[in-house]
Length: 304
Picture 1 (cartoon, helix red, strand yellow):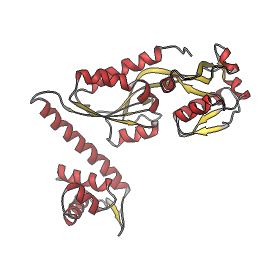
Picture 2 (tube, rainbow, N blue to C red):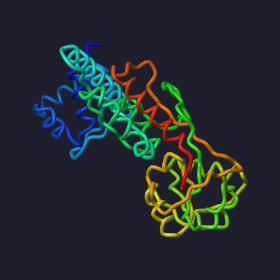
Picture 3 (cartoon, rainbow, N blue to C red):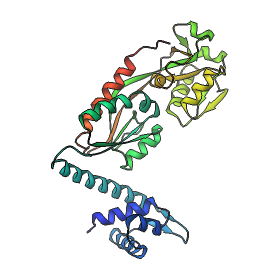
Picture 4 (cartoon, rainbow, N blue to C red):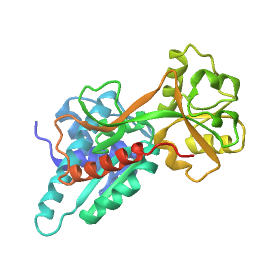
């Protein structure tokens, strides 16, 4: 098998485009040349990569797998070239990171300031996405590191735990539950509950607490984003249960946070990387900065 980096680049461009014509424009080559390159790649691999129609392209299952491998190979090659260029003077390169939105708000800004002071020539691509999307970006080779929860399935992945994020009640300061030092999950049953959509890691945390405590609570309101839940709580429409990393989203607002107990619910956050993949040289420094900031954020007790 004799595959070239250019063939990998063409496959990635075609996988990301709606048509071969669009991919050809992106690569600066003719459409017939691109189509012939794809045909040669299919012959070399002995698989069909695309389902072709007159209007659009669709990757086959084999095509999706091949595109993921090609994308990873292209990124590895570019990183290697960046490392060579860095040796010519100054440290340059690019690190792609996926992070939960709560982590992106709480820990990433200060961590990136610290990192940029040491590595001003490194470009950071930040994807603030939900956990499942972060895992998909990591497995597809689009990001180098995911800063998120411990994944349920770790085959081919390595998880490095950093800290534990604990669930808290969030309510208005004059709310009756704000008068308590701690609040039991079952106490939420007497108040309108604002929940996050089921695709969210926050929702999985609250649902697990309800199951553990044999509590039947259905959200009065259900939203997709934590800032939307916060806005509804602030308007007095109900209470919410949110992990402590979300506090950065509503500091200095008219809200109180209280630890939720019976049970205490924690989620472990940390770094997820692909197994046996070499990270960019500065990635460890970036991880150190994020680790320190995450631990600092989670060390602070609720003060509202």
